[in-house]
Image (cartoon, rainbow, N blue to C red; front, side):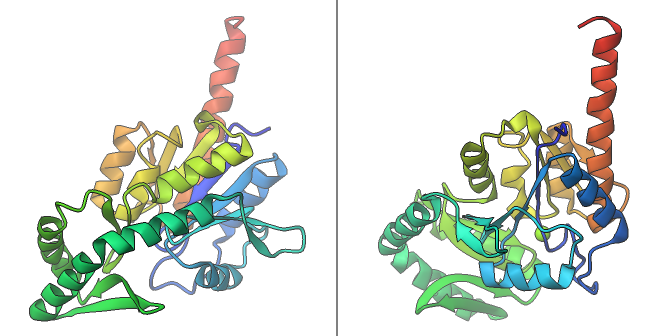
Amino acid sequence: MPNIRLLSTDFDGTLIGFDSDGRCSPDFGRAITEHRALGGQWAINTGRSLEHAVQGLKRFAPPVQPDFLLTCEREVFRRTEDGQWEAHGHWNETCRQRHEELYALTEELYFLIADRAEKRGGIEMIWEEGRLVGFVTRTEELMEAFLKEVDLISADFVDFSYQRNTVYLRFCHRDYHKGSALGELCRLEGVEAINVLAAGDHYNDISMLDGRHASHTACPANAIEAVKHRVRLSGGFVAVRNYADGVADALAYYEKKEAAGFRAAASVGI
Ligand SMILES: [Mg+2]
């Protein structure tokens, strides 16, 4: 078995650039093929919906397919033998119910946020199935400024939280994020945190980079400073290359590092 049994990677900004052709890089292709050949598993842990994740994956066209898709920063799917995606365990259903409960308690807050957004301008609210689920701002600076307002008016709603990725923001229950989804996947698969490597580039990845569910962390060179800081705090690997090439370097780093550790232990008779 590989030292890294499970690789959890973000997708946009971590495996592909926002201005790229969306294709898998040759170096990442080689690294993930080798990881799979060693018996390792791969989860894409993304803010995309399942439908958009599948679309992105089709264009990415990696030489091996991921075993799991963790979508909307909170849902857990596994790949079936015929290449389809099915809910893994009961997590998604529980997640949906808890968001229903949250919506019932916080609907007034969402409309207040929409009202403030309209007054400020440059902010588009995102609706899904007749519900406010988040917003997108014209610029990252506007997102920073508006979030200060959102934090103030949401302070009394204890279960309310959000996941932010560049100019996109999705409302969520505070218990559901990439970190808790990864934790559930590890529980279902019987994988210990010591055998997990997580890699991401933006704010919505920080919950899987705090060392709790993945003992090994990494980010590509293009990651935002807050992510690099988080990765350094957890003793992780900050790549010198961007996007998927940086993740490929992280995989190589951790496999070699662990192998070196085993060699050192063997040499002193441990
Ligand atoms: Mg990202």
